[in-house]
Length: 114
Length: 112
Image (spheres, each protein chain N blue to C red):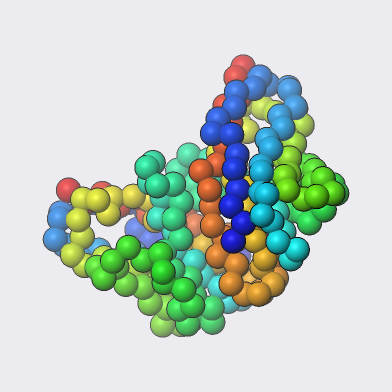
């Protein structure tokens, strides 16, 4: 398996624009997580899905952020409108099963909002 | 979720053994202890997981005392490539609500 695949690897956009980040989890994994990492706040869990259903979105910073998982092999994280303070590395991770299974992370998307 | 406390940073020299301790005073009965490693520009990577006593794999050892209020990740004979941030996580994956909350981590720098 190719692992968790994220795209794009880098994204530079201007304030106010819509940004869509994409993630393909490892085949067979039924949990998917979105994280954001900054120097100031570290790794923050934004939302996670189980069997394509959002389970906990309490980490989503505000209504400008939304995430979807239309099927088991694809998820998106959308920011609309984007702001400079959204600049961060966004990671997607997936795992199999329910009990103490390890997380597998993608390489992340480096987002810069100017 | 049990809160974890780790040293912010550590320095070591190549060839030395490095021990990173994590405190988790309010760990619950069902909680496991898991360590992840993160290199710059990469996502975290699983290193090791344990419940009690000692666990060893090809990368590291994890020591957990009887009271489980702390744990120690041991990296034998580190090399420059072990320079990374190491995260300790505590939680119960069995309930399905394991949210994998990462703390600040320990930034390990290995010197030549």
